[in-house]
Length: 138
Image (cartoon, rainbow, N blue to C red):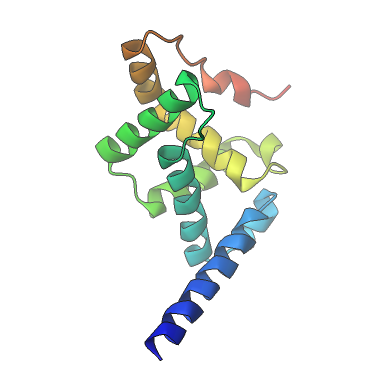
């Protein structure tokens, strides 16, 4: 019985996470429950801050290490990340057709840019360009 319960909970969590992958716009983001939003942002955060592929170079590693230090120092929680996505879409209405993954990533880079650049400087890498330049409407 215990194994069945664990498997059922695991299957439900996977199905919720898979649903979050297809959040392709602000409109779909708004339709998510607070729990779905929290699961979505934590999943993206975990990937951005903790997973680097085997082929990753020093710049990808600097992102991961910068995000990790940023999250720890700022004590970022899922509610903070959800607010970051909401704020990104509100401040960049021209980006509302972009996926929530992109909104969160851009918001994370904006918040953590100083940490990323600190790691890059320590490793002798070029600084990250100002992400606010990327958000300007063309």
